[in-house]
Every structure is written in C-alpha cells, then in structure tokens.
Length: 399
Image (cartoon, rainbow, N blue to C red):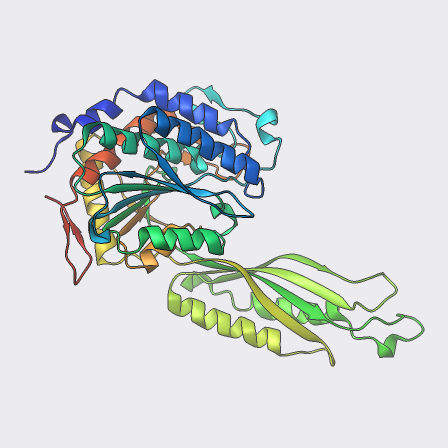
C-alpha cells in the first residue's frame, strides 16, 4: 500500500514547521554569498551546520580552496550507493557583496524577497528540514544524503564536480532543490552549457605610420564572432552567444590582442559535440593573415536529459504532490544546473523541486511562501515511496 500523508510522521511534522523554516530562510538570505565571496558562502554553510547540530546531525566538510566549501550530512547508516537518496542544493548566489544591506529579506503579502531567496536558499531550507524530519522519525527506504555546494552559479568548478560525482554516483534517486518554476512545475530537462574564452593574438603597429606591419586581433575576432553566432540553431535549441569582448592597445595602434567570452547552450550531448567541433574550427582558422587564437573551456554544465529512470522518479513525485493537494507537471529549462551532471552519471534525477519562485537573478526575485511547507512535504512523501532500483534500467518504482 502506498504511503499516505496521514501515515507519515515526517510529513506531519513538516506541516508544523512553517515559522521555523521562514526563520532559517531569513537567516540565510541575510548573508551575502555571491559565488566569488568564499567567506560569505561558507558562512551560509555554518548557518546550516548550526541547524543540523541543533538536530543532532553532524556534517562532513569537503574543503575547496578558491570557492565555497561543500558539505554533506547523512541520515541513516551507509549502504550500497544503489540505495542512497541524494538531496542537492547550492549556497552561492549571483549577487555581489553588499546586496543584503541594500535589500535584506522581507515579506510582502504572500511572497518573500531578498538575494537568492528562491535561487536557491529556500531550497536549502527545504532540504534541511526534510533531512531533519527523517532523522527524527526514520522511515526513509534507504540512507539520505544532503549535499550542499558553493559555486554552482559559476558552473561548479572541478573540485565541486568531483564532490558531486563522488557523492551521487550510483544513487537510486537525486532531487535537486532548484526553485520550482513560476508555473509551479518542476524541471524534467535542462540544456547543457559550455562557457569559453577565445583569445586572439595579432601584432601592434602604428596605425598611421606603419599600418602594413600590424596584425589586427580585433579584426580577426570580428570575423570569428560572426561565424560563432552562425552556429545558433533556434529550432534545435542550440545557441552561441558572445557576451563579452575586449581588445586593443590604443586607438592609433593595430590591436595585438583581443578576447571573447562565449556561451554555448545545447539540448543533447550530440549537439554539444557538433557545436564544439565548429567552434574549434573557427578558433583554428584565420581570416586576417598572421593572426592566431586559443580556445579555453572555463566552465561547463552537462545537459539534463530525462531517461526512463528520471521519468519514473517524476511520476512518483507528481503522485506525492497530488496527494498533498498540489498539481505539478514537468517543464524544460534553458538554464543549466548540477542536475545535468547527476543525470549524466545515470542517476534518476528530478530538478526544480524547491519552493516556487520567479524573477531569478534579479532584484525582483521572489519565493511564494505558501509553497515552502507543501513542497517539503511532497518531497518527503516522494522519498517514502521509493521502493527499489532495477539494476538493468536504473528505474525507480513506487510501492
């Protein structure tokens, strides 16, 4: 028989935690934690560590030198990875230091506001309380692991990716607490992204007295930008955007150096391979004689491609939300997230299970307060309904 909300003490307890959840959310939002502010991101981690400590739950830190540390917290004794249920979230935001002083946490009507309130500090609070509920009452069908990282907004560097891979590999289910969509839906697929820098090298010369001796890197980069943008194929969901450019030495000197920051978005791994081959060809070929260039990948997100296991996980979650009175559908997002990495590892994955919000990455970012508790209860109930993983398909099935 399926687990019902009435028979699940963790779900019932979560229903009584609205005030405590909002208090923790206010505490976390009122800490500046931009991705490059390691001290701030780590301070958010300490706040969460204090919460877990109050519930008798030790955390394990994974130190990262340049960005926010990651940490894990576990509920239940370790078992084979095929039984592990992973709850993920990131503590960093896109906002600079000082943003909290300008617009601290506030509640206006039915919405909460503040830097990162939805993306994704509300999701962190939700995960923390779900983990605490199962620690208090038990009943999870396998060990729960909460993973809290610190640099997702800048593409989760090599150290964070290693921690995510180590923690997630083999997991029977991964729930990523990115914010629920403004529609109320969760995310069942995401684009992948590759973030690159292309450097172009030329030769400086006086633009009046010795023009012919110069090699203009700006001119070469201009040709490359046109070619890069030609890769965009909107019907396929493939886009290339040159978002930042710089170059030149002075107005009367042929440019010896130029660079461009490139954003590639794609839907499938095959699309990535095709686009990267074209980008590498553009970098290798030159139009301005004597120019040369170098291409560097600076960050990357895997695409979240929904497989059969992820579809089954969504159905479990959808049913759980229905049983607590919420209707939810799956939605595709052009944005990237760490769910792409876990899905690429073969882990049944669901993203955007956090409380509902909108206007992410802007001063108007908000979180719908009345979704905070129900989304936590829905996640807890979905966890209770995970039964087993079929080894050959990695699918997750309900009771």
